[in-house]
Each structure stands twice: as structure tokens, then as C-alpha cells.
Length: 202
Ligand SMILES: [Zn+2]
Image (tube, rainbow, N blue to C red; front, side, top):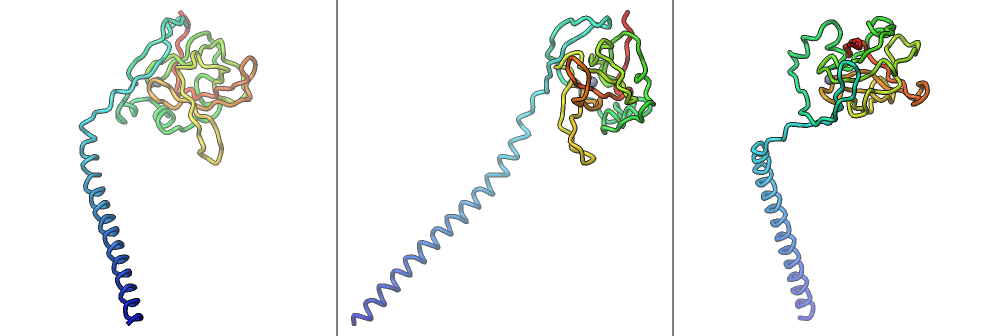
């Protein structure tokens, strides 16, 4: 009788455990079902909230190199077809971070005084006053015309860790920046001529 009672107790306790387990499992399944049901409804709601047009801060310069004002403007967004209108290798360089062949570009050996603007959006990028002879075959500068006007991005392509430089206003790839430049910054902005448009000082 004693043994029988103990067995009953054990069975009862096993039943309770099983019931608790089943209840927990059911709650988990219900929870998952609820989560799976709720998740799409959140995703469906997302497109109703349209993203704000992205704005960027740039410094505006005249063609005489004069710093005019700091401006908050909508980012320039162009279609792939619009970018393809750029001549020669400018599309591959600005959009796919290609690099022009050294000594092949039109600005590596240019010594005129003027301003270098973005080929994609005319944003002012470099001043001839910071251009120096790097011996690389690419136009090289020790500073951008304004820090705001260029964006530096960590680039790990080709098994190297480099810092890519893009136009803040339109995202055009410009080149890379290295820390082996001359005084006063010791930086070398190694640019592609094809990403730039030179405007001689008036
Ligand atoms: Zn640009």
C-alpha cells in the first residue's frame, strides 16, 4: 500500500511536470506564432514612413577660391544613367572606385592656380595652393579645401586597409588619402583627375 501510494505520488508529480512542460511549450509556440504574426505587420507599416531626404553640410566656394558660406543642402542623388553621361573613365572611377593609370590623367602635372571641383556635382574639393609634387602620377594635395566637403571612408579592398575619399555632396569616389604627405598636415590626398574639374582662378 505504501509502495503503491509512493508510485501514485510519483506518477502524479510526473504528470504535473508534463503538464507544466506542455503549457510552457504551448506558450512558447503561441509566443512564436504571435511574433511571426506581428513581425510582417511591422514591416508592412514601414514603407508608410518615408525617409527624409538626406541633407549634408558643405562649404561653398566661389570660382576665385573665396570661402562664401556653410550650407545645409540636400544630397545630390543621380540615376545610374545620369552618371554614365560622364566622359571617359569618370563613370568607373566615381561610381565603382576605379583608379586611373598613373600619369594618364589631365591634372597630375598641372600647376595653374585655381579650384578643383567635383566632376559629379561641382562641389569645391581642392585648392591649387595645397597641391604638391608627389611623384606618383596622380594629382596630390595635402588638404581638402574644406573638411566638410569630402568624406573619408575605410576601404579594405585589394587586401589593403586604406582610406577612400568621396565627395560629401554626391558620393563620387575621388581617390585615397595617405599619411605620407608633406608639411603642414603630412597627408597626401591622392586623387583621380577624372573625378575633378579644374576651374582656373578668374
Ligand atoms: Zn560631388
